[in-house]
Every structure is written in C-alpha cells, then in structure tokens.
Length: 205
Length: 205
DNA sequence: GTTTTTCCAGTACGATTGCAATGCAAAAAC
DNA sequence: GTTTTTGCATTGCAATCGTACTGGAAAAAC
Image 1 (cartoon, each protein chain N blue to C red):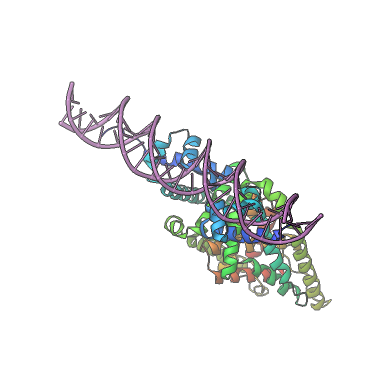
Image 2 (cartoon, rainbow over the protein chains, first blue to last red):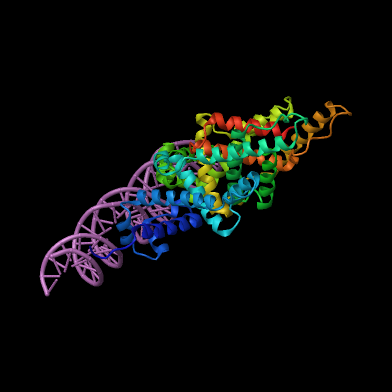
C-alpha cells in the first residue's frame, strides 16, 4: 500500500476550515474553494476527501455536534451535587468565550440548514433524548434528597414546581435560546447567566 | 406623473417570495432569479425595486421581524389576566401551524445571517427590550395581586421564585429555543407547550 | 397630439460556483 | 530495478451568480 495518511484527520481539518468560514461569513460563503483556501489546501484535496459538497457539509455538521457532545462529557464532574453538575452542562452550551462563539455561530447556521434539509440532519445529528433524560434524573435525585432533609414533619412538597422531564426540556431549550440571543446581541451574557441560574433554582427544589 | 404603483406593496410581495424560498431551501438558495421566479415576476422588476441583493435581504429581514411584531400586538387581549396574556404572546412565537412554520424557518435562517452580519441586523431589527419590560411588568402585577389575595397573615413570599426581569428574559428565550427545537424536530410541539406552561406556572406566583 | 417620466422585460458580461477529468509524485509491493 | 496504488495539484466546463445596460410600453403632464 502506498502513501498512507490519516483520512479522518484530513477530513477534520477541512471541516474545521468550513466551520470557521461559516462562523465568519455564513453558510452562503461556504464553497469548495473558500474552504480549501481557509484550510490552506487545494480544492483537489478537498475533492479527494469528500465525494461532493453535501458530503463535506454533512461531515462538518456531525463534527460540530460531536464537539459539543465532547465538551459536555468532559464537563461532567460526577463528584459535584446534581444542581452544579447540570449548571456545568448548561454553561458549556452558552457561547461565553471566543472558541464557543465560533462554534455557536457555526451551529446556528447549521441549525437553519437542518431545519430545511431534515434528511441529512436526521441521519447525522445525535438523539437529544438521552441528555434530557439524564438531566431529568439529576433533578429527580436532587429533589428526593431535598425532601429527605426537610424532615418528616415538614410541609409537603410545594406546588407549582414543574415535573422533572418538562423542567429538563425547558433547561436545555432555554440554554439554546439564550445562546442564540447572545450571538445575535439581543441579550448580554450576564443577563443570560442570571436567567439560567434563576431557572436552575426553580427546577431544583 | 406616469404610471403609479404601490412601491411598498411590490417590495412586500417580493419579500414574501424571498421568505418562502428561504423557508423551503435556505438562504443559500436565495438569488435574484429564484426570488423573482417564486414571486412570478422578472428579475428586472426585482432590480427595479431593490438596489441590490443586500437591500432585498434587509427588507425581507425587517419584514419578518415586523410580521412577528404584528402578530404579538394583535394577540394582546388586555382583558385577560396577566398570565394568560403572556401565554398568548409566547404561543405566538412557537411555530405551531404551517404559516408560522414557514416564518419560523425563515426567521431561523435570518438569525444565523444576523449573527454573522451584525451591521445590517442592528440597523433593521427592533429592540427586544420593550417586550421584555412589558412581560416583566405583567409578572410583577400578577404577583402583587396574588400576594394580596393570600391575605395579611399568610406566609411570606416563597423563596426560589426568580425576579421578574430574569423571568421575562427566560420566558422569551425559552419560547425561542423551543421554537427552533420544534423546527429541527428535536422536540415535539406537545412537549414544547408543556415545558412552556410549566415555565409560566413558576414565573407567575 | 407631443413630451416626459416611471415601470419593467430582456440581454449581456465577468465572476464564481460544483464537479469531472487529467496528470504526476511518492510510497508500498514485487 | 519495475509495477501498482494512493494522494493530490491543476485545468476545464457548464451552470449560475449579481449587476449593468438597453429598449420599449404605458400613463400622467402639457
């Protein structure tokens, strides 16, 4: 076998360039030549590693999704109490530094793309349900712990606290919504964190 | 003066076509020829009413924003109690029918566009602050009413209820996040409504 | 009637697009 | 050494892009 190279690494490098172009100028500016130039390679090489533009886009879409997933799993310190653990998750979803701003803008562009091309999105994007279920479980366990500490003679559980699963759905959707509002400058990062913390306070007992 | 036509109506008709194309195939597919074909007019006419493509895009961007704004003001029955009034607002932001799905997909595409071209977005998009302030006021008045009905000897206000302004920020961001999750099929409309209602229950005492 | 101004269809042009095809360097297989 | 397979640079092509431009129909002004 002749000259051997790491295909996945090459594809990832090209996908990185695509993400940077998308974050800087939008998906409309993503072309084979633009991406190749951003990656510092020739268009022929891009063509060598991706059958066509759609394949390149699908790979990049999956790459952003996996990067977010990696960040979430990396920020999973199971030693922390449930509430802090969930807070760690959700903060990772907010574009609070430059790196995540780039990823966030690219993710926003891909969201619009996914809403229109649901076929590729469905084939490439991960199922959001496990994460929701995990957060719902953390909420449940935290509330059980809180009820135990309140003692047997205490007041019954307060009404008006949302059920765990809707609360988990709301937390994730809220983080996503706040993230896009930060990117579009509709909301300051400080207000976003304040709103998210308030939401955490009500979701956990 | 020669043949007189309603410029604004013509522009709006073209912008409608642009929105439909963007909702169906994304902003990448928005070209002068595509939009003209969708509107059933010639590209020459599009050029006559818009100096260039950017002007057309900016007009369409403003058009979606105004349409959402109109829907919100139209669904403002001040006779209802505050909570129902806010619920009416937020439900209008969810893409629960075909018409709003089209608008929502276009709005999603424009959001990604606005995050990248913040100059045009800043010049065209309305300030989100008044709506947030209005919702925060409704929350305040509803809580004051609730406290009065609870009587003077009752328990003090429960802790862990978020301050009105962060609650308003959260409600709007949550509606936006749920809306995009519905469009990307990450979340069912039923779960979205459930999560939003739960959020309303906690925001209003 | 003529004139003038607006409205818009049509065409043309240079740039850019996605993609196919060609060709060659380099490294493993022999 | 030769052969063979892979990795990639380059070029070319048809299609589409945004935009400039031309020309004429139509209606108000005269």
